[in-house]
Amino acid sequence: MRPYFEKMNSFGRELNEGQIKSSEQNVDQIKAVEAEVRETVKKIKASGFPEEKINARGQMTVWQRINYLIDPGTWCPLHTLYNPEGNAEGHTNVFDGMAKISGKWCIVIGFDNKVLAGAWVAGQPDNILRVTNLSKRLNVPLVWLVNCSGVKLPEQEKFYANRRGSGTAFFRHAELNQMGIPILAGIYGTNPAGGGYQGISPTILFAHKNCNIAVGGGGILSGMSPKGFFDEEGAEALIASAKQYKAKPPGSVDIHYDETGFFRYKYEEETGVLDGLKEYMRDVPAYHPKYFQVAQPKDPAFKADDLYRLVPFNQKQMYSFDEILARLVDGSEHMEFRPDYGPEIYTGLVKMGGFLVGCIGNRQGWLGEGYPEYADYPGIGGKLYRQGLIKMNEFVTLCGRDRVPIIWFQDTSGIDVGDIAEKAELLGLGQSLIYSIQSTDVPQMLVVLRKGTAAAHYVMGGPTANRHNAFTLGISTTEIYVMHGETAAAASYSRRLVKEKDAGRSLQPVIDNMNKMAQEYHDNSRPIYCAQKGLIDEVVQLNELRKYLMAFAGCVYQNPKSICPQHQMLLPRSIKG
Image 1: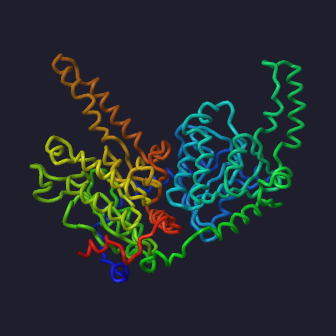
Image 2: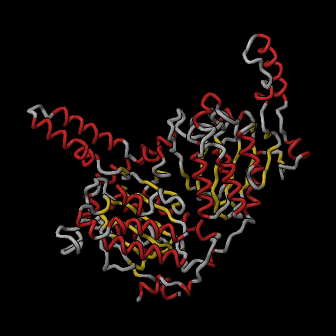
Image 3: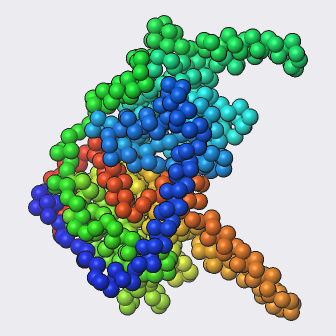
């Protein structure tokens, strides 16, 4: 298959002087949002005790541990802004991302020991569930940096129980182990109760000499026989017990290395734990890239910074999706699937780091005379019509057959609506696309370039496809809502306007409510808001987007669960005809 893949068709053009001059404001608008995101992340990472205070205790912070552990330049953080319950610290007390350790891709997650010594807090269980699902979907190891003081007791009702509560991670760890996906855990600090469970459920435990894990910590043990109320005598007893268990908490290294053997290794230095993790990561199952690379990796032919000029900040401005894709893929080369059918959708094969990837994206602008063919109105890019839905179904199905991972790019205003569209079977074709995605069993990811709207957000590989969607990225121009705020306000208040008009009353109060609703839609669809609520998994700078796409492809092809030999692939032959 070398002739198919080694040199694909080139696409994309250099920006001209007019494009550069006319896009200065666009660059400034996008970079202003990126600066806001960076400042928010900076505050989040600085929450809790300062680094100097943690270091003075003889400990490294979670960020120092991560930076020591991972291969330089490979960190692709996820869920940094995730904070669905509005914790004051701005995060869920765990940080995670994709990275290489000893040359192998994995998912890394660590408790933030600067905040409540890494306690369980609201929103954390769902964060951890996303991470374990990511490891499962990409079939790569999960590496934990455990330093968890247990439950934040005053708020236990927010995260302890329920179907997606904190205990879910233990069952997900069991699932990963059953699937042959190793979970490596470096254990630091005092880890009682919930922290102990988190520490014992991985595959192999690497312990620092001063760490411990236990079913119950000193605080629990010292209060196990209350009278049913507290008095001065009971308080004095608690003081004595607390002093005893502070001196030597249960579940020390003496117990779990020398007696139970739960700790496979123990280390004198904190860095020794990380070195142990590195050593094991060298030996995890991984194919050499030559097994799956279809060509030598190449940089795109055009600069990544062009994206600041090509992705319009103005949601109503048109642009060329092909030009954006040309700045992201190896050599700015592709093999487009059915270019003359379903013009509102791009489908094609590209290379990321020499690996074959399928790409699907919304094209923008006027779609030409007579399209869609079933209607008497013109088609506009960003909306989905019959041909586009059929084309995506076919492409996704062939990617599944050939075991090719898929990257989706969304900028969609939804699926065509009305009786004409219903007669054209758009409802059924949208569900068909969901069925096709579910049938593929190949990893997929999504980039929301601008609008993720209505059911189109679901059917185009959105995070609701959570059995296959590994993660979803946003950028500074991302907006996600069921419909545009102005449309929602019109839909909500149009009948009220009629009633007020017929009654001879002032329309201004209704108009004020409409403007308020439109503004709320705008505020609640900003990139930072979307990341905080989990609608996307990270807000990424435009010039770092390719790094994530490369990491995704690298993870997918590191140890795939199934293989289609290159010379048995059907999709490239279907394209060639």
